[in-house]
Image (cartoon, rainbow, N blue to C red; front, side, top):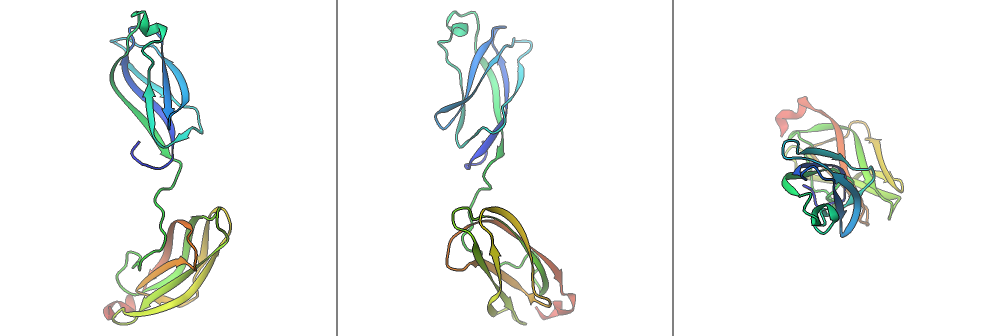
Length: 200
């Protein structure tokens, strides 16, 4: 399915010939059958797009056809599969970041920090306090600890926090104070400080 995390199955795309006989197929995930459907096709008309019911999730998916079912056991039908694919959508945001390293936010020089947006899941550990450190100075070697703190509520959320006026930095890092959480991603709004560009 392209990703190793939990995903929704949306569609089954088949290029198959069943010799004009209805053949039952099973869509399975993690050793359980999630959806059963039938396919009827011919050599001349073998493209089929099957919409999967909403809300079906799993990690490892497969398409299963029982060759002992009557449509195939009697040899009236066939399962001549030319091609198939499963279309997925992420149900899980994926990789967990425990502690962020220093980040220049895509601009290598001094920048004015305006706000920061967090997307997070603290269902098992919230509320949580995050701490922001900055790297400043002409050479970019002055580490300033705990410049700002942000409190995330309990649950799944997305929150924007303003940053104190005139906070300028070359790099920042943000991390939980003493605990591990599932911080899916963060994004900062900045205004590049052109007047300080020649310093770094």
